[in-house]
Length: 481
Length: 95
Ligand SMILES: [Zn+2]
Image 1: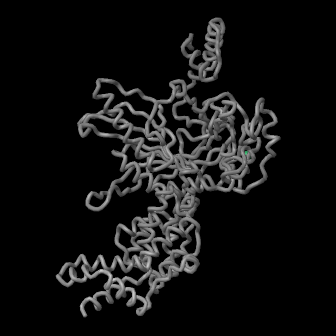
Image 2: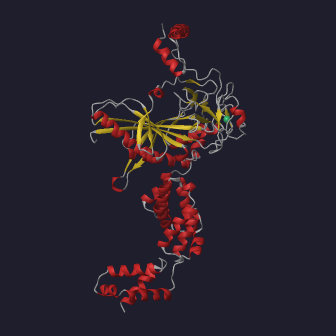
Image 3: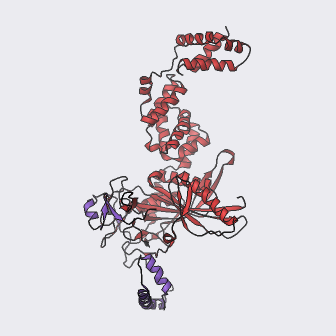
């Protein structure tokens, strides 16, 4: 496998978070009943006239500037013709030879700790276009149902140079893009809802070989896991084909996220011939220096700047600061919680370990998480005040994640208050000591493990509610008497 | 012929049309005539001429990003030959 070099380029589609669609005043709101966010323009009725949403241009220029692109002073829209039921006009309005943004680049960080490295990935272009509708399979009739609510929701397509060399780099690139788009507030980046997704162009070549191999395109990947797994799959597949003396066929492929396998789409759908031509219904876009300058000056604090601030202001290690600032929403959650409990290290630890683990396991984003930043801060204050032990806090945290309850209420309901009453603990310690004479002898003979065993017994007696510092202190006192 | 039979077959596939052999002959000849006629434009010297992005001298026709009510679903689906569950129903395409 090491004899081969992998060449990857990504085409990322990001739905813009405008209020209305790209050419009509229908709302872009997600999740409504089928075909209730439609009008004659977005369903492609003959005789209608599309008019471009001004925010689409503004958002695309924002993205272009944040990705170090040159912004076109003169740009136009084109028709991309293909026949499919999710596209009622039988053409998609996109941009062909004069996209809004070109020749950009972004820096990505790949890997962890000692293997960490930085790399620049070129951005070929960013153009505006319209999304297609949604096709639903009707299991009862066997037909396909067409819902046009998403049809003509504005998109930007961000096309990278073939600079990516591994699945890890592809994921890092996608994470960086997501982070930038979130900070700019031009896309909500909800990958499970399809508002951020990508196509992977991939080829392999023997190391030292100059020309590229034949590439395949795997379409519509909408999770980091799917991107990673589909790339690993396709690299292996292409190398196997070549090693067995076969040839790679240029084709469009899909990836089944559940079965973890990629497959080629039927060749008929591969007959790409889009017959692009200039869209006669839409006027060219001509941008002034002042317009671009104004957007540039209004760009928000970007993730790498925020990261530096977290390191200097809160004294967080670089890795933590990077993880917390990668997502705008995580950064916001962190800052809100810390404003209440003023314990940056604790807030950071809770987010990076328990919260990220639970979000991953449940495949949800922090924005749809039931734990609020305020409740996390309260939990940390309960630990800091000694009301609960950190072990109990972990249980409470899981419950907060399940039902979104206030930690103070959970503690009250379940009687989880930590026992810090020295007399009560002393009683418990004496009881355990007298019940375990062998361990006491072992401890006095210098076996440290006996101490741990006794602490464990006491915690068991109190169902984990005894304050561990007091238990330790008292146990040693009694044993050393 | 400036348009080959193969090209006509390809265009038929893209247009979702099924052509008989006779139709194929006829369209190959008809389309060739049309293309020949249009190709006279290729004789014009366009060196130094900028490509036309739009036939009218207009630019920056934008609208504000303000939501207005969409149409009733009944209206939108009125012309659909077949519908089901609030959707247009078409022959199976989902794999
Ligand atoms: Zn509409």
